[in-house]
Length: 305
Image (cartoon, rainbow, N blue to C red; front, side, top):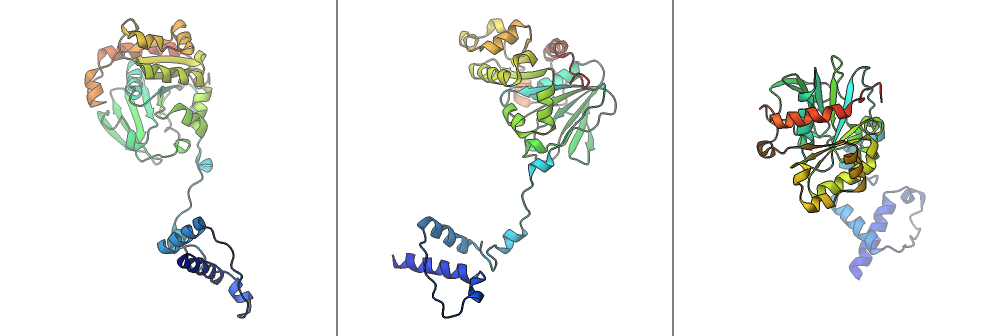
């Protein structure tokens, strides 16, 4: 009890000595103690012990610490040039094959195409996918290529979705596949060019696994995007071979997508599942599935948006 009173008095004395009260009051003034809560005292004591208080109430290290950037000032806009087709690919959950499908779509496209992966450098799936590295841009995009496909990924960590810089300008009109690589609700809530793309795109490709949790998550994402704008890509066996419990987990919105003929089955490759993307060619079955999906995304141009 005595120790608590002593610490309270010391904290009050330290507070007054650090303020203008010391010079404004005559030396004979008696300071009336104020009640000090245990939590306040504990915070003050730990602050003193850690050096968080200095002559002005802020430690030297805190004064030198740069302010946290305000993400609202870092949000970027992106306006693709006329003639550039843009297609957003969203993985409904982690490790569902969205990046692999994005590369397959670009590989199956006629003419030039590129994949813009929005994942942080710590989570990229394109690190080993290029056959040639082409260097980095001034705003942190690392560029590579494989055959006719340009690959663009982050070269640094990107903790804030709404601060992702816009993709580099394409050298010529091409198909741009944007691998969103973040939870769709996080993107839509964060703002920035990526959120604007998802909100305005006439078609969004949602990628999920043919499992009960995978299709439940797909239903949620279809609800967020709107069933009329969704092309679903489901990784796994053909629908005829889905287990009964998987079929029963289909929600009404996903069933509407199926009824509209906008669900494509994506075969799973064991080598890709283990090794991820490498410079090796993609399986022909995956390219065929991507070629089947592409016509369902017609109208995804900057003019249509």
